[in-house]
Amino acid sequence: MLRIHQALQTGGFPNASKLARAAEVSTKTIHRDIEFMRDRLNLPIEFDPAKNGYLYNGEVSGFPTMQITEGEIFALVVAEKALQQYRGTSFEKPLLSAIKKMEQSLPDTISLNLADIERTISFRTRAEPILNLEIFDALAKAVAQRQQLKLHYRKPGHVVELRIVDAYHLANINGEWYLFAYDHARKDLRTFVPARIQSAQPTGKNFEQRQGFSLEQRLRDSFGVHAGEGEFKVVIWFNSRAADYIREKKWHPSQTVRELKDGGVELKMTLSSLAEVQRWVLSWGGDATVLKPKELVKSIRAAAEKILAG
Image (cartoon, rainbow, N blue to C red; front, side, top):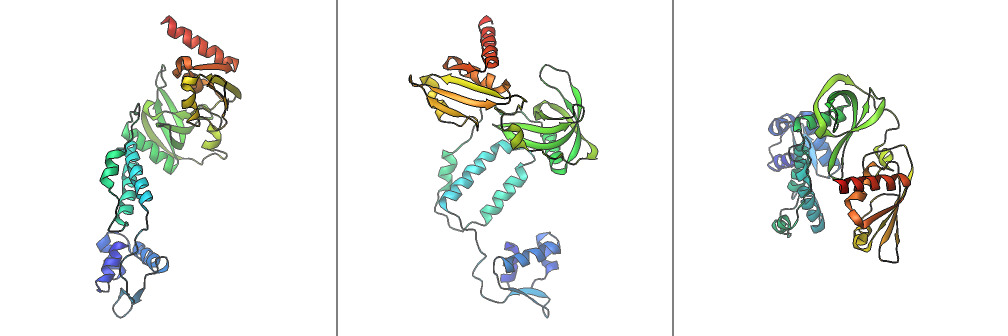
């Protein structure tokens, strides 16, 4: 649309075919953009049959620019920094393209010093996932196009298995990528880690996503990505040394936090699985004490004894 505007400003009566060749798009795109400029941006565009081209029939000082505040520009820069985790993935090109379009629409003069923000904002991850970008790209395309996939998948400690799956959803959860897909052999929705996929090829079939699939609903009672069938009332006491860290975050939608007399806190949650919360509790060392449920108390004790025995 900026190129259309510039062509109209020259007064050369450009038509859709000429504009399409210059912008390397279809004439249908040109007609759609001109309609948008006239009806939504209120630009005085009309077609002159005698000249077989378009013109501005009124004064236009400049193309309408995006109105943006200093805070919004700051947020945009922060968002661009956050995109580092998508470098090399199939998301990089469209994301950078979107940012470039926004930058081109900004006013010519901006008082904010972007260089200062560039130096003062950064994102780091403790353990960056190692992704095979070809496989990741195949997964992203399969999810977008509802393609069935043939995966060669190896779970930790297991041999490579052939899995036929319907690729439902790709999600980045706490910095880790996961594929949620319907596994035909197991006749159930399963979670796959892209780093464990050794190959991914389309079977040539497409699928209709089963009704009732909702990632939010599936993970509602999980502590991460493992969704179980149970209901566990988890109660954990944290001492005063760890209490501030617990207060600073929302660890689970169901959580309640109660202050203890010694400066510690009690954290209560309702979970569908104990697999991930067990590892989380162990990461706190002696600063966390599990009170409920009995299954979690027992598994934490057994894991701690193994650590001591080793």
